[in-house]
Image (cartoon, rainbow, N blue to C red; front, side, top):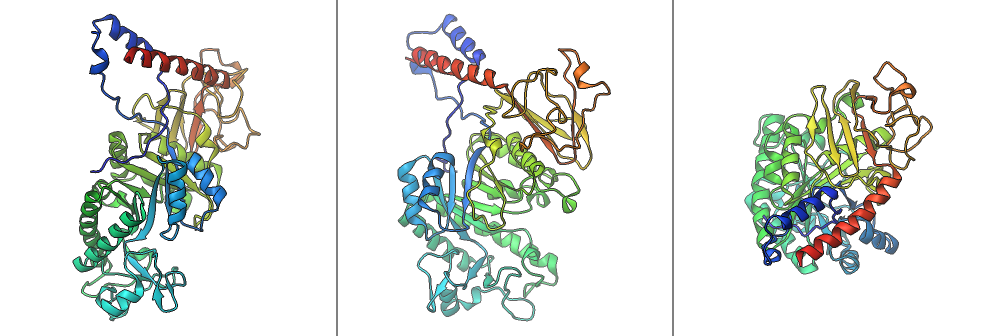
Length: 475
């Protein structure tokens, strides 16, 4: 597996790290200690930010902002100039090109003047396939080509055909290397054709056989293409769907540089259930990948309200790792660069693994905060650590820890819904200074708490001193 070049600024260690560092010197550090120091493993930082910039050509201002703000950017194939500008402004940003695995397209822009565009959203052009390989168009049981419902002029291709797989791979690897992309975001590594069409593929008896043929074909396709991208020192990041239904699929399809989850933190049952990401084996597979830190997790949460934003960001924080990146999506077509104020909350570095309580609530502690996610379809309670506040708020006065009702007028996306109340029967104002009242989390909601502002400022001053001590000792 290629080592991704994604890098993040690392928060400095806490005072305990300094104590360990100095203790090591006092218990037998030789003069050659500096030579024995190996590079520390990548740190599990709070989720980095990324931009799925496929909705429209980016402006110059958006490119400059992206170079400062994002660790990963995905652009359309005709935006090579924007990719090169991003690399110039910030060489650490990984810029991937969008390519569809499963379709070819003949809408304006993909086909112009009867010719395939120079830079395609797919791997194989519609005109080229029509003229040279019409057998690469998938057919239904009636012998008709399959156009995706809701996406006019998108045509399903025979992803199980080794010749199609090889032609797609050769074309995309060549383009990625020639143009200078860091890799490819391969869309529509899907689990079922039913999201796009009710058709049954020729040669299959029903929808189940159709979906199995597509899944098996995409499994082989990813292996073939992934090996080629690895040899080219590029990454292949598929947008793999519904992995909670097929154990091992996320792990298998993310092994060539990472994978994308476009419905991360999605709520079940039309928005009335728990969080779908935590069903089946998906979360455990994402968690294992995040902990290794060798490949990217590109997570997208579609947000229509503050609760969805909280749940998405906090769920990503449960997976915090060196290459875990999250974005909200406020539009269906990704036309805007996205940013959430939660990404400025300053959680820092995870200091423990995410853990699950018996009531289904997951939580995790960071150097400068704490998060909890209620993954269930019912209200649950959890007790946070003392002394933390909602991001952007001053330290508490009458209570040691804020509760969802302690700031009813706040519109911050990190404030739980106004209907939440503390679970304790006593009022929060009568709590003793050492008592931390429980938080009540509605179904599929989350809480993000951080150090008070002055603690954050002091921690930053400490971290600079720790950094100096560490560098002097290493010399």
